[in-house]
Length: 70
Image 1 (cartoon, rainbow, N blue to C red):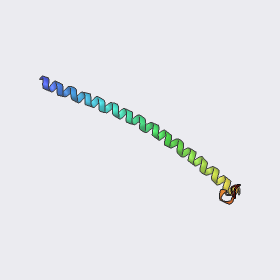
Image 2: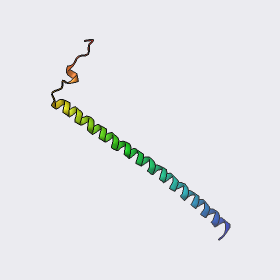
Image 3: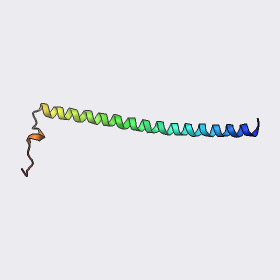
Image 4: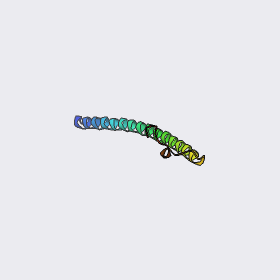
């Protein structure tokens, strides 16, 4: 194999390694973001159930309560 081909092959291997590293980093970010999304969805579900339970219990609406300065 000539030196030109070896140089081109080395450059391609370097680019492939860089692309693989970038892909691994992006996968880690996606995994972390999905975990955050899952946690936020669970928290939102909990809050929705709390609001529904308060409404079912006949709790007064915050819109019906006037702040002290009125």
